[in-house]
Length: 209
Length: 209
DNA sequence: GGGGCATTCATAACGGTGTTGCAATATGCT
DNA sequence: AGCATATTGCAACACCGTTATGAATGCCCC
View (cartoon, each protein chain N blue to C red):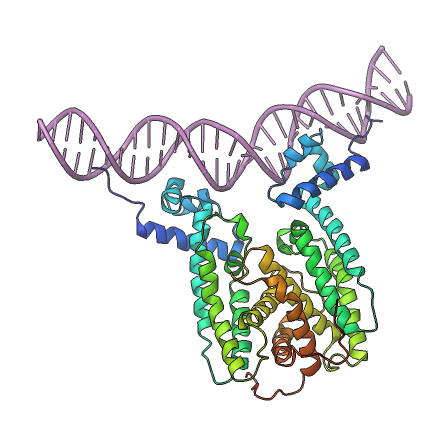
């Protein structure tokens, strides 16, 4: 019927790999489809037939980064110390982000800036989110966290803390003269401790109305 | 000597104001210097003589946003309940970010992506950071936080938590089926509580080695 | 075996961006 | 009036993502 396809799966992977390398060390805006196609000795048409658009390409990259992220977090095996597991997940979180800053940036980039109607992105996020929620839930059963709050709420606070501190560092907005790395673990510990003792009135801490 | 200047301070403010409006509701990438100049009935040269570049313009916008942010946080008056002050600063933090998402985004955008050699940006950050550190310091004196840690470390953890949760919401990466707003304050409270009780070994929370 | 044809792809064009060189302009001084 | 010069608007440059076009290609059928 027609000529042989060269825009095949192999090319798709080659382009994805090259794009990942560029994004990895220079970010998404430094990724040019023209340059990418030229480097791979093909044309921009390839990118558009394989990925639809630059957003589509970045979305594929997102899937890849999310998978790696989930894998990394999954290396933290549950122990009989769930609260410790939460800390360890936080440390793994930080380690991945620092090791792959641009992939991490793709994962947490503004979602409204991506191609819309991509409804399975939350699914990926939830996937990496689950081990943390599980650890919290086990911690509640073990009495290490207050039983009042939903485990999702506690997990979200840990996620937020990790994401916040990591983001401050990666974006270069950490307060000067302060090594964020050093206080990352201590902050997580304080938070975990707080969720154990919170939910009941604290002396000297008046309610905010 | 030459013709009358029209690229003057008034034009500078007009451009800055228009640019702020655009960035405010459509973000920095939606801001086009050509469009901006056309709207202001001038040429792109004006932007370059007044701001040097788009990065320069965004930097001026950064100063403005930082000033507003610092003002907002400064509305939280110190009380005799420093720990409560910390919570209130966190809530003010969130309020500003949610009310001005794109300005907040400018404040915490990747610093390496901005024009370099701008060394007074950390100064602005520190300015908004100080009230929080002060509240923590007063809290330590009042015995509301453990005395072991530097107040900067505790303040940074609060900052990180607020920034993290806010960023997750603004970027659309909050876990589904979970209202982050509802657990923002509770997370802050848990963290503050934790910094009071932390620094001493916690039963059932083994050390991570 | 050779022509028609559908498919696949590379090239080039389109509209947009930030940025910069250059020529026109408009003033104050001689 | 004429000159010097600071100032400005316009057009060109080098990119970008995206899309239309047309040429190359290999299969089917006669």
